[in-house]
Amino acid sequence: MKMKKAVLLILLITSSAFAKAEKVYEFNSTCQQAYKEITQLKLNNGLALIEKAKQQNPDNLIPLVLESYIDFFTLFFNEDPAEYKIRKPRFEERIAALKEGPKSSPFYNFCLSAVYMHKAAVAIKFNEMWNAGWDSRKAYQYIKDNKKAFPTFMPNDLLYGGLQAVIGTVPKGYKWIAGIFGMKGSVTDGMKTVTGFVNSNDPWAKLMFNEAAFFYCYLEFYIENKKDEALQFIQAKKLDVVNNHLFTYMAANLALNNKQTELAKSIILNRNRSLEYLQTPVWDFQMGFVKLYHLETQEAAKYFEAFLKNFKGKFYVKDVYQKLSWCYYMQGDMQAALEARKNVISKGAANSDADKQALKDAKKGKWPNITLLKARVLNDGGYNNEALVLLNTKNNTNFTKEEEQLEFAYRVARINDDLKKYDEAIAFYLKAIAIGEKRTEYYAARAALQIGIIYEKRGDKKMAIAYFEKCLEMDDHDYKDSLDQRAKSGIARCKGE
Image (cartoon, rainbow, N blue to C red; front, top):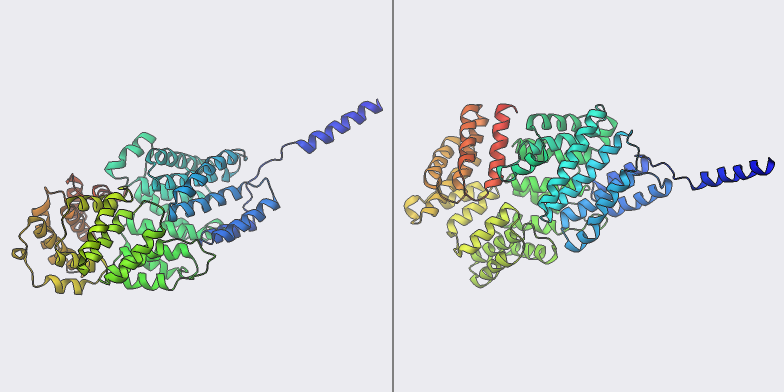
């Protein structure tokens, strides 16, 4: 009997030693610090803290999600195909490992949703649209289920609200994705959810503020069309655009797209230059536009060339080569301009609207009217008075080609719009619609969109919706998907949907 008891005791001890340890989701202080470092784009610091967390508890699954953030940011900003080949399989490996965690934890579905979102966003960058659609659906389903199972778990709101808002404005060209995958969205509900999260005093909301502020500003800027408000939020919340490179990139990007070029320039030049941040050619990309928008074409060309030399991806490559060709064209260096135009056709990929437009323009083989081009560039940079000086002495009779007459009307309208001379702007927008409604240039559709935005500002929602719908009705024009998304967002805002 003693022998049997001894054997049983040995077996019990042995089986306990080899028993599989239970996996946990432990977002401890080390993981929290790693997350904060990563969402400042201090990726190596974050990685070192992840390794520390793994040593503290090898069965903690949170470090896997943090590693996913690192891969996401690295691939999203730099788009290196060689890096993608290495890092892509890791997303599925992490997903498989995360599924070993306890389903009773609110982090089970949340973490899976986050990794699927990372995987989907990166897939879009590498033009794997079908995979992106499937992964988006999985991300949506996991976070939707988690919101039902754990309604008071605040981190849900960050992912669920963002997905709701974006899905609510899926453009016609991509509507099949949402339809096939059964995803439903609402701009109003999604924005309300994200806004509640970003302003919450909940401990999780405070921890995840960097990521939430990034989401919020982009949704506010592009979905809500509250551009000034998005930039005001950055100032009001005192977001650190010097030492947090995620905020630096966002603030500069939004300032450029809001025609506040001098602000963007200041943000980019004053960023912390420490090597502990993710090294990316995106700064050369942004500075190229800063210089171009003020017609500093020689400096712009240097930055664009540096970006093209170091960037390994394909997004916006055609667009940058087009802008480079403009720089040389405005300098009178036609040989360099033609060489850059050849690269528009042969380099990069036509995945973004800007790249598609650059390719289309390059294939036409025509050069834009130089006065209209300079006015366009200055207006894009917010230098409206300088742009107006170029066009004030012109009228339709100065342009013999219909496409130039169309662009002239549109340019004058946009400049007046930006100067808040709305009646003058509407008059010229209507001229642009009359000339270009049946043409393939984007000017007429964008004119309708802008009129809708003006009426929305004035509180005339009925007229606003009418012009947003007019924008949607126009087919077979440049930037169709992005303009449709903005018009659809406008209608949703006016209807409170």
